[in-house]
Length: 188
Image (cartoon, rainbow, N blue to C red; front, side, top):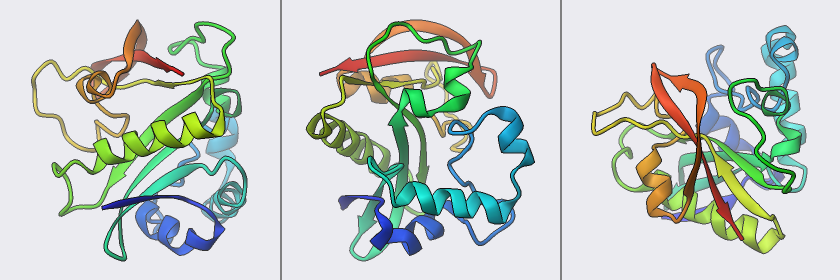
């Protein structure tokens, strides 16, 4: 498995893993736009917005590959660029450090439970550190030992982040599938 930045030369792979050709595709814009803007932006404009993000620095995510096949995605970016987080009442800003936020994981069917998300997380840690980020934040669920549907665990699990060196900062008021979400931090 190899991990690569989602730059313009990998646009086709971004579109494939996020399902941008389907009406139900994930455009990885949910956190990047305000609620109102997200709800008013039709699919073709969402695709255009993601294409712009893929051409920017830092890229909006990293891709995981098995050979030449794209098998995973991890979306991230500076917290200040995540409009929904900037305005969030349920996931508060805890300080003024210019941290980056990890907001989602997508792993292709057939590759789940094989360490793809862990490899993507390690890749984001390395990438953000080398890019000079002050640290990383994430907002994973705490499944409390239960097996969780992959759709509900798109934000990652608390245990995965703790094993990667993140520390719990606070229990947020946010949930996913009625499971609590923590704000976790890894300072560089």
